[in-house]
Image (cartoon, rainbow, N blue to C red):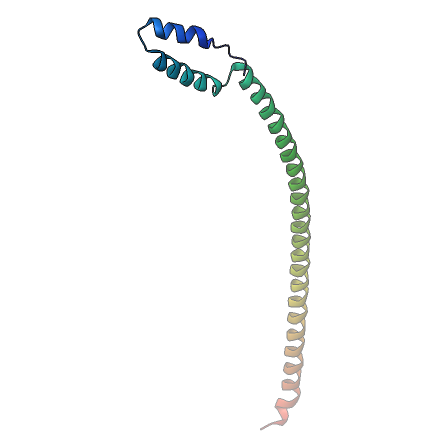
Length: 124
């Protein structure tokens, strides 16, 4: 702390104002204790510099974390694309299977129809 406090001058001023010696001494002691606990502009400037350095370090760490999250986001985008591609493949396979099923059912219908045409004249 770099505050100058003249205790002798303070004590003398209080005596001249009519305070007794013990009262002047007590008031001077209290004033000195208060002044010792008060921060100066220089104290605040040092504290500000320390806080600025710490916050700069924290900002750097958050920048690193942001970069890691960007990488994770990219991996999720890749996974989403792979799922989309897989779903498109399933949709194409379903379309082919439905087409084959329709062809098979149609073929069975033709065979059954042909059998009916062949057998029907013989059944009475």
